[in-house]
Image: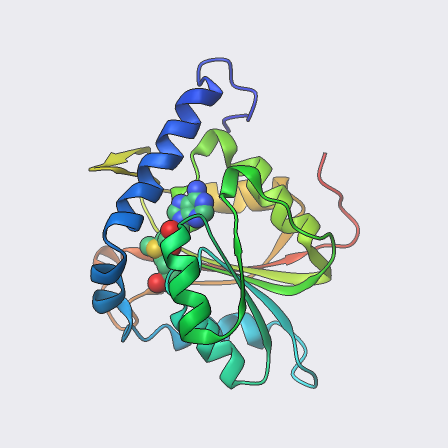
Length: 219
Ligand SMILES: C[S@@+](CC[C@H](N)C(=O)[O-])C[C@H]1O[C@@H](n2cnc3c(N)ncnc32)[C@H](O)[C@@H]1O
C-alpha cells in the first residue's frame, strides 16, 4: 500500500491532482447535475441504512455530496444529513437543493468533529483520493464516525490509478479495498457489484459497507 509519506509523491503534486479533479467538477457543475440528478442509488442508500439502527434518526455525512441529490433522500427518510464537497459550486447547489448543512472541505484537508456521524455515505467519491492519501482519508472517516458507525463506499473497480482527462481516479478490486479498510480499523459488513443483474464483467462498480470496529484503533 502507498503511504501518505511516500517520498516519491511530493505533496504539491497531490494538491495539483486534487485541484485538477475539483476544477473539472466546478466547471461542469450544471452539466453534472443534469446528468446525475435522476440517478437511482437507492440500493446504496438502503445498504448503508440497513447496517445502522432503524429505531432513531441518524446523522449521516454525504462525503463528496455533489449537488445534493442524496442529501434530499436521507432527509426525506427523517435523518440529519450533512454534505461535504471540495467544489464551492456544488456546496452552494447542495445547500439550495437540500436545505442541509454542507461543509466545504477537500478530502486532503478534512476537519471533521470526532465521533459525530452514525454513517458516512461516499458514493462515487473516494476513488478520487490518490492512493498515497487514501489511508489518511479513511482514518479521518474512521475518527469522524461514532463507535460502531458505518462507512458506505461505491467506486469504479479495477487496478491502478491515474488521470482520466482532468480527473484523478484510483481503481481497486475487493481484496485491495478491503485491505485499506481493515488497515484503517474497519470490518467488512457486506459488498456487492453494480449495476444489479449484469454479468460481472459489466458490473463496473463495487459497493462496500464497512463498520468502525471498537477494538482496533488505526495506527
Ligand atoms: C462522481 S462525483 C459524485 C457526486 C455524488 N456523490 C453523486 O453520487 O452524484 C464526485 C464528487 O466528489 C467531489 N470530490 C472529488 N474530489 C474531491 C476532493 N479532493 N475533495 C472534496 N471533494 C471532492 C466532487 O466535487 C464531486 O462532487
